[in-house]
Image (tube, rainbow, N blue to C red; front, side, top):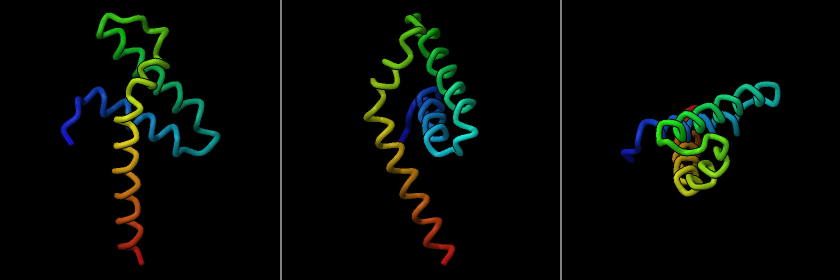
Length: 80
């Protein structure tokens, strides 16, 4: 799927924050927040509304997540 590189980075950061160890979560969430705020800043929007950007990209994230899970399952099946 050909996504915008900024959107792809945002989705990947969200995936990383979701999948990381609890001890790494604050740093991963901070990176996610920074990426979302930067995207909003680049668009001339209020950076304080970064949660709304995450909500607006929920459909794209679900597709991204499904792709990642399929990749993971294929990788795990090859290890057997």
